[in-house]
Image (spheres, rainbow, N blue to C red):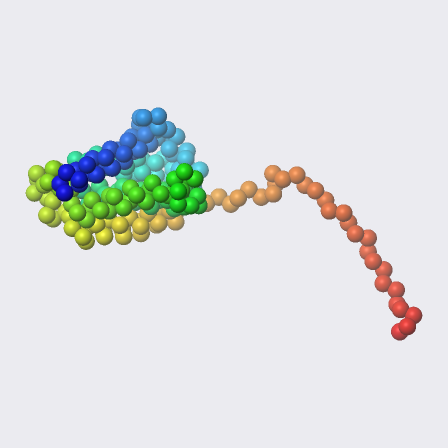
Length: 189
């Protein structure tokens, strides 16, 4: 089991770290802070640069997860970002990632929750520092999942959603005006 948790922790942690550094530093072909801020601004998050920095920092916590250091806190940061991503970008596209859906985000959210519940395992800095007994277990895992959903949805709810553009962009067409109809009294009254 220790090797399985290590593999899961390292792979998921590296994936998150990579995404976070794309947002913060433009590494691995990412947009960097300004590009990410522009994207967050378009989604209605205010202030967009601060939100981009929080999301990027939360994802770079993948390094902590990979090392097994402060595992449930790293898991909470990453799980929260996944909830916001699903709510603001992927939900409307349905489940499958091939359609831009939330499948991938759900798997990552579940993985970090499971790691928080099981603990970082034998090959972790939490174990080396004697923290793993205090920072793992079912309640930590459930806490990560519940708090990430509540916190993520709270962040999502604070967006300033711009109304859809009105029909101003549409060409104006006039409907044919009808002539008034004259009603004549019937001779049979």
